[in-house]
Length: 502
Image 1 (cartoon, rainbow, N blue to C red):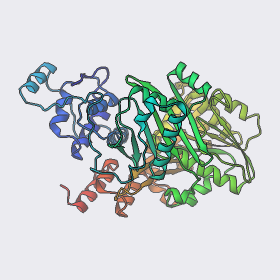
Image 2 (cartoon, rainbow, N blue to C red):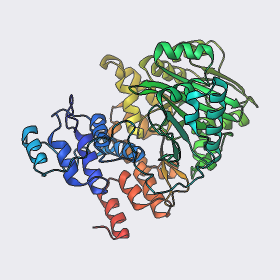
Image 3 (cartoon, one colour):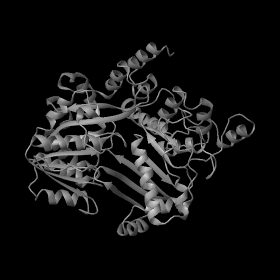
């Protein structure tokens, strides 16, 4: 077993351990075995990686969801009900392990057999995928044809992501669940390299060789676009391909139960709207839906800054100018500075990732523009804290005042599998700015925002936990899914009573 280094058995790790045991994802003895040999400063990510390395959890999607739940619980609820602190030395543990006191499963080696799909089968057709191992001895054109056919078949199956990696079987994500394709051989390093590079232009190949990773969007037609990330890992090249929808869906189609609340946000002529959530929660899709709504109902100039441009939005009643990081502009701050001289009415920021971008975005929202941006945060309160925490202490008071005046709303969304695993469901937290919200931001009391959201349901506000409870009571998500995101004890007990869980 790998010994972990560098960081503290913190609240997130304790919550992850607690939730993994409570939901019967990992036996308690395995958790205790891992904790026993952890460095006193282990953080969430290396601890989660150790769960994978030791085969305690084999489903990456489940582990990702567990980590998100642990982070949210630690932030919203503080210490976990159980503290998994080391009570014995590593030497004591190792002697117990060798005597059979703790079961430890060795990590799988490259090229070994992989676990079967969790359900024992596939909810989609795997027979139409071409054999990618043929790429090892194929020409570049043949490799391009192979990967194109592979991506198109994944799209026709309704999958959201495709992963093609050296020394691994190809796998896809389908309604949040990862599936290794058992009818595909493990790809050699050469086959993976040739496949992933076959879709690149000469300039992109040069950039990838220099930087060892690359973000771009490849397209076969206007309706067939894929957001792509290439990277180099210890075994070779890996490509991750996000399948972009061939049309822009409405807010109702995305699963928002009160779309009129969000539609009202798009009528403002100045202010800041934030769309947040963890990775793969549909932020870009929601952003495109809002932009398309503005495009149809207003007569304005819209400038977007994206990395990369994923969903193409043709101009309708508005003039839509989409700029891409790298090919169209050097950075978000550069594009934002230029945008202020390009007569925009609405500015779209694909990601508010640094202090300069955040400061300029808030300033633009305060001085007559409608700014819509995205962040990777799990709740409305965490979103505002993130915006403020990037600034030094001597600037926070000024930024807090600017944010209080400019904020119009926060849409914090999650995507979770439906009860029958037939689709992904939108479960949002929605904050609409009002006098109470403005005062809490201005006085640095964002920790009290949840109370405002709970009492603001008539304005269309919705707390994240209440959204999950609502979906559960509607019979749309399972009790297991709800319990991963609901931490209020009364609500948890309500679910457990309904399911007969002790």
